[in-house]
Image 1: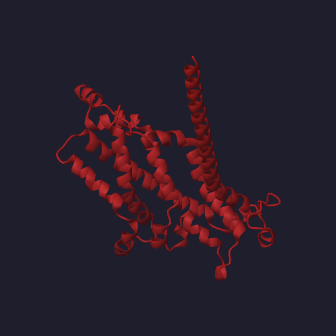
Image 2: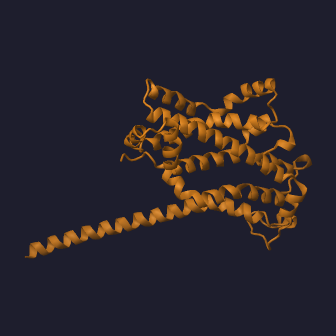
Image 3: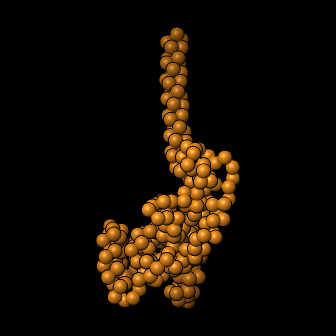
Length: 295
């Protein structure tokens, strides 16, 4: 009986040690998450708060200090003294063009590769995925020369086409991963009922693919909205600037910058992407994990 008592105490001590160890690990995990969240969120909060500062506050107070009051003059000056609305329109046109191209081409190509079994379909998939390894910087000079010869510089086309081309491999991979989860029996049953391949794609596959469509659209929507390299290389006409190039309007002579208006413009620029992620985050996570687990 005494031996059993000591054995029970030993077991209790082991359980207590395990519980303490688990509690410490949980505490470390929580602290790490809070630290990463603070590092990620603070720059955004700092930019938004700085957009309400006056010029005097930038000159006299600490850069890390919050504004003394809510000053909306910076936002008024952004709309009145710059072409930011035109820049937003340009970015929106490019965004729509890129998303239509990527979604249409990637979804149809993925459907053909994954569901329409043909010879060398996997080799074709690998051919597309090789594009992921190609850095876009090496294409800037050749594309500039081609667009210059074709007269496409300072046009929406010069911004839309390369972003479709470089975004297609990743979008194709996401669609292929999702289409693997769609049972082939659905397509076979629709074929027996007399549906054409086009009707199967548009009436059955596309309605079932809302999550991956939202994921791809959001992912490349953010990339396109924030794109700078192609715009800086191919666009020199200020009337064709997207928002990323338009931010240079607030840099004056000799590099002097109106920081209040600059932060206000940056806040307006990043606002659409945050709103988009806020409302579509569940669909994005669902689409990103599609195909990770076999059904």
